[in-house]
Length: 62
Image (cartoon, rainbow, N blue to C red; front, side, top):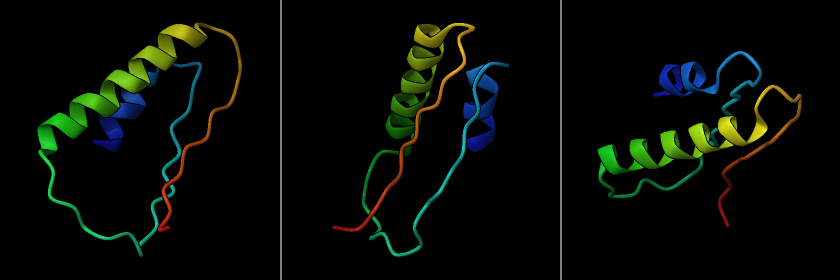
């Protein structure tokens, strides 16, 4: 999945993954999650265009 997201970002953006090993597992549909993440990346890429910028997401246990 990470390689697909990196490919989808295009040349003007970068994907960095910082996944906590302490997160609890969850029961989700893998295909739906992949589709949602890919849509977020593609929408962000299209909104950014060729402008430089940074966006950081991370997960954490609350």
